[in-house]
Length: 317
Image (cartoon, rainbow, N blue to C red; front, side):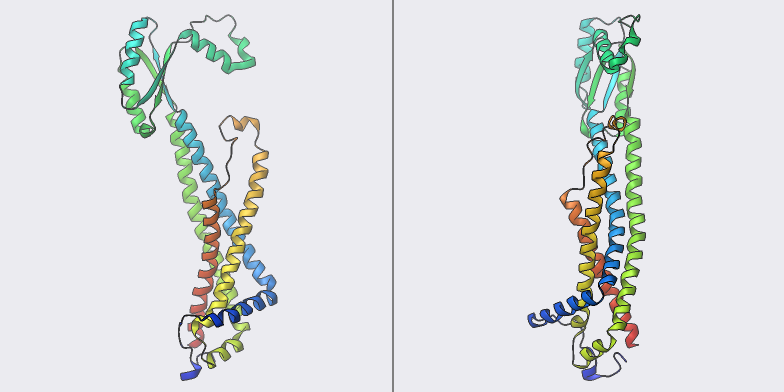
């Protein structure tokens, strides 16, 4: 029984590996992968599915954040002015608004320019405007907000100040949409870690169970190694290395599968959805891809190491 003999028959604990032992460990890993190829492949595919789901959440989150940044850069406040204001009054009001610390720039849109912009926005449907007076649209100021003031309460406070300006009749802005997309991003972040955590635990137990089966299959080999004085590090190293390989392969396969799914999805985006600004989907950057693969490497190593140590303690007992 493992650990049943004291002295030379007992494992000598964790000791650093020597260069001469690395070849032996490499051969054990190679033989194990060759003999239990389908088992190793199954574990790698299990990690692939786990990391694929986690990477998909990361991909959605990054594109939503990019969409939010794009909308934030386009965030502006439309302040409509009274028709009776003179050119001097409009110029004075524009200069006063420019002194606000939250304001980056102000563009005055006359009634004539508002009509032209509205016609251009309608495109082929602009014929519906026939018969309407050209002064039906009010003049306004398009006010761009500085990035540091694009938070919901700050924009709301700026809008409230503008409403108090003499000559401004009403104020409109699309901050509600930005706030809603922020909530969606927050939900994706939580879902990523919650679902990812459940999948990681599942994968961890699958890896642990496989390590236990491998230990039972190599019981005699491990007992002989302990009898000749092999350290725990020497015994555990092949299993941990196998877990690292499984995790790395799983991470690489998950990123490859996610890339193929991303390419297919990007080519299938309808033109109507492109109006929301999501026609330029971006794949995960190099740091994110490396993070997922490293996560698989850690998951495989940790699952093997902790399960191995727990099982060996139980076996000795």
